[in-house]
Image (tube, rainbow, N blue to C red; front, side, top):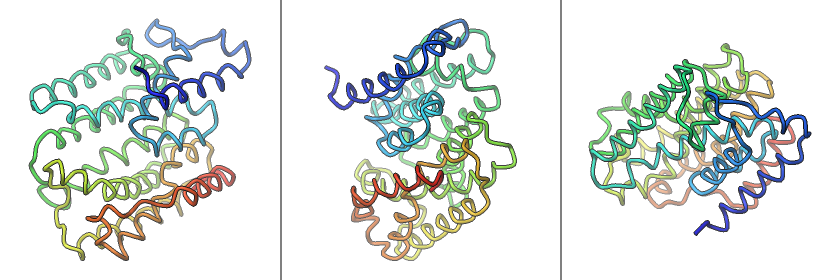
Amino acid sequence: MRSTGSFCARRLLRIEYLRQSEKRARAAPQAGGKAVSHDDIAACAGLVHRGDPLRFRAAMAAPVAARAVLFPLYALNVEVSRAPWVTAEPMIAEMRLQWWRDALDEVAAGQGARRHEVVTPLAQVLDDQACALLDRLILARRWDIYRDPFEDGAAFDQFIEDTAAGLMWVAARALGAPATAEPALRDIGYGQGVAAWLQAIPALERAGRKPLVDGRPKAVAALAQNGLARLARGRAAVPRDPAVAAAILPSWDSARVLQMAAAQPARVADGALACGAAGSALRLLLCRLRGRP
C-alpha cells in the first residue's frame, strides 16, 4: 500500500509541475528515446521523501526547475545507499549495486537507457563524466555490505569524498555550476557528509558496522572540527550562483551538527545530534531567502 507521506510528496510535486506553462508540459524531454514524465519526477520525489528527508526538504526549497535534476540524483543515492541493507546476502547486495552501475553505463553511452522511474530522468541530466563520478559513489557503498572497518583516516575521507562530496558536485554540475566551483563544493559536501555520518553512528553500530576509525571522544571531536573547517572553507570560496545555491542546500544544518559533535563528542554515541525541528525549518527558510546556507 502506498504510504501517506509518499502520496503527499507525489501529489505536491505533481501540482507544482502542472502549474508550469502548457508549452513546457507539451515539450516533455526525452531520455534515450523515452519520455520523462512528471510522474517519474514525482516518483523520485517520493523515494527521496521516504529515504532521505533532509535532501527532500532541501530539494523542495530549491527552484522548481532544479528539482527535475535534484530529485532523480537524490533518488539514485537513496536506492544505492539502501541496496546493501535490504539483504543479508553479500552476493545479492553486490548484484543490486551492479544493476545501478550497468544503468549508468547505458546512460553514459547514450544508447537508450533502460526504462525506469529513476534511470529515465537521470538520462536527461547526466553526461559520461557525471556517470563516472556516480559510479565511484556506487563502488564506495560496497563498504556497507561488509563489516570491515575503514583501513585508516584516508580511507574514511575517500568514502565521504566519493559519496556526499561527489553527489553534491554532480548535482551542482548538472545544474550548470562552473568547473572552477568544484573544490569549494566538495569541501561543503565533505562537511555535510561528515555531519550526516556522525548522526548515523548509533544505527551503524547497532547494525554491526565499525563506522569510525577512532571512536575515542578526542578523535571524534577532531573529525567534527575537520568537517567544520572544510565546510567553512567551501562556503567562503563558493561562487554566488543559483546552480550552486540549489546544490548546497542539504548542508543548511551541517554546521550546527558539527559544532555539537566537536564541543560534546559524547553526543555522537548517544544519538543526540538532531537539531530542533522548528529551528531547523527556520534556518532552511532563511537559506532559501538569501540563496545559500
